[in-house]
Image 1 (tube, rainbow, N blue to C red):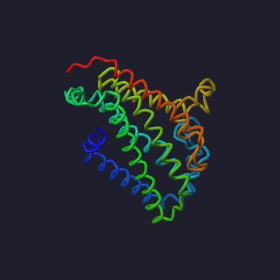
Image 2: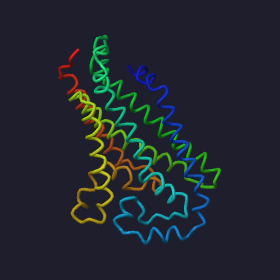
Image 3: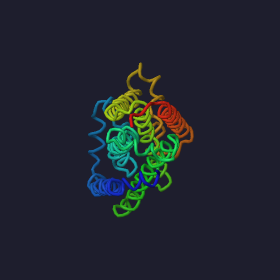
Image 4: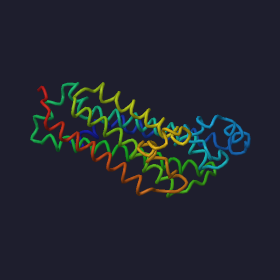
Length: 262
């Protein structure tokens, strides 16, 4: 089931990887024109505090490679694309199969429902890790061409936390699909949850009544400790992994107990 799921993505997954590599190339190509423009930092400083917090611009220096990548790529665009991939894949793992009428064929095999689901999870994890690795390698390799000199270990720390963030919402989509069998619901709920979590993390530092709740946002586990500057956070990773594990457990139990029309 694992290899079949990956085989079904034999065109889509390389396309995603190529698209991310080209996206990184675009930002790297723009970097030399931004590096020598001190007015960019002055422009950021003039923005409202809430706007700078929402897009991770507070304290970032656009004249440095780390600050530039943090603002331009890792604050919004990369998480958005990774979440589109994982929520789509998670929703399609069970609910998508059921909607297409192919789930009955899978259930007719000797594989248990638990094994089917867990191997679907494995394919989701492998696909996400592949995209994170492709993005990290592209940042380092293409960045060298523009003298960006990004720290290798911290780039892959950021990619690890990005993958964990995406898998949280991918696991949520998979759990909803496994429990309800409704692909629309398993896509829309994680999308709304991601928007709320992003706003909660972004506005937490500047809105007093949101501050106590900021740490519960998956985006806080992704970027709260700024992995591109400070490296890998074991605490944040453990929280993300625990969240993913709970959602997968819900998916396994819900799928095992649900009646599926064959």
